[in-house]
Image 1 (cartoon, rainbow, N blue to C red):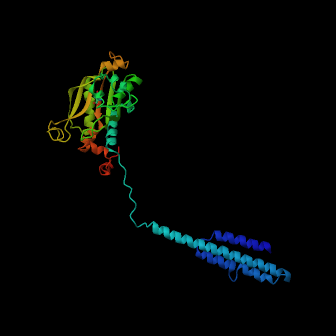
Image 2 (cartoon, rainbow, N blue to C red):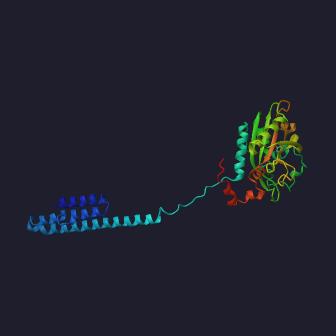
Image 3 (cartoon, rainbow, N blue to C red):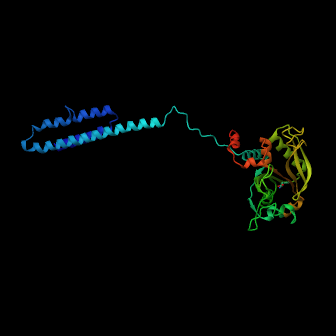
Length: 344
Ligand code: DAH
């Protein structure tokens, strides 16, 4: 008898677990507590029991009925709550409302230009080299043949640190570091940050970026330098761009030159951007001074080379028509957003 009661309770638990909706609850209630239910059939067994067993069995059946009622009520409550929650979440996630818009991020124009420059030089077989922003005087000046009294060493131009180091004023430092570590042939470019004690104005910033180039190999000539820079200018600004080189001076190149391109705004006719000259200065360059090669332990009778330095800001400003360098550092999202489609 007791087993029978236990089995009914166990079966009810299983049935309730599988119960999914109000209809199932109704069926279960009928099965266990209704007129023709299992519990009622137990009451009808009472009469067949000996008189003395009836009260205790009756009590047990009552307890079972109460327990079953409690279990079924609880399940019913749980199901109702599930329905309310589901309804609430449908309310919260109103699928007819417009979605939450996450605007796409964008690369900074300086990053886009740096990557374009890297791509162009990599396509010519150059490799990317890197050097530290915090440098010593040897790599920033001495090894680059820069005399003690050169004005760029001045406190007013260079940020010196208390520990004798400085913030590199040019990426030419990486020329030295590369020649120290690798034997020729060398074909590298080195993009990176540079620092100078300049007040921010439309064409100056105390932090700016350069791409340095260095080639050391046998039989390199000024024609190779000119051709490489010209290839770069056309790849960056289009095939119609003309270029020229003018004599200049840099301590670490001999001869030294500056490279100009025909104005990308007026195509050389003369405008405000090129100050009516029709030309824009693009790079410093030259043949690596033999004394630099010698300091690096490279035999200048066998090897020679060229080097160049190009400002990334300058290219970005020309390419994207940015009139003031400071705009590049203000992080105004209205400016940055305009580059969200440029993925490179
Ligand atoms: N380092 C020079 C500057 O910051 C740019 C430059 C000129 C780099 C001539 C070179 C070079 O490699 O050959 O003004």
